[in-house]
Amino acid sequence: MKRHYFWLLSLLAISIFAACKKKDNPPPYDPVKQAVIDEQLIQEHITRNNITGTLKDTSGLHYKIMEHGTPGDTIALDDRMNITYVGTLLNGNQFDAGEKTTLGEYRLENLIEGWKIGLRKISKGGKVLLLVPSGLGYKNANMGSIPPNSVLVFEITLHNFYY
Image 1: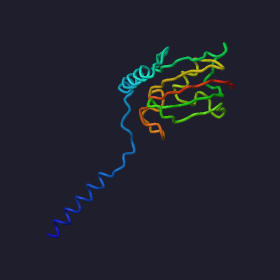
Image 2: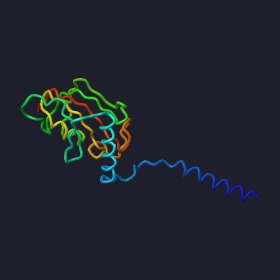
Image 3: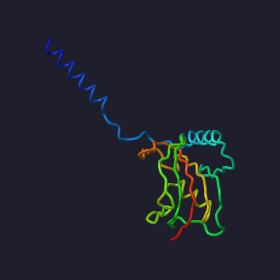
């Protein structure tokens, strides 16, 4: 009889440990499948929020130039910048913001692809709305308050940039 209890307890212990096993690795990222999902989510967001005048880059980035800025040079990938920005998820939850933030230690080339593409659409004094599909953001990585496969919404004013 004690043998049955031993096996039963052993089986129960194995089941508990197996159920509690931590999953450290996210599922494989499928960029094609996720791009289709992100595109649908972006289109729904645009419709739901009555956003007009958006354009779509060949990369999949949706953007709306709210102010072009002063005519002249556009920011280079190795430039640093002075910006104001707000970053939200599609549900409106804000995950980041900066007021006239100087990203002196960050060059544009070190930021997410969506910013690299979107900020080059405006010049000094320009303002842009970016709808960044997950493939141009953080893909399937969990970035704190940003869940995996998140479409990101940024409103960015580019005050200045410099080398």
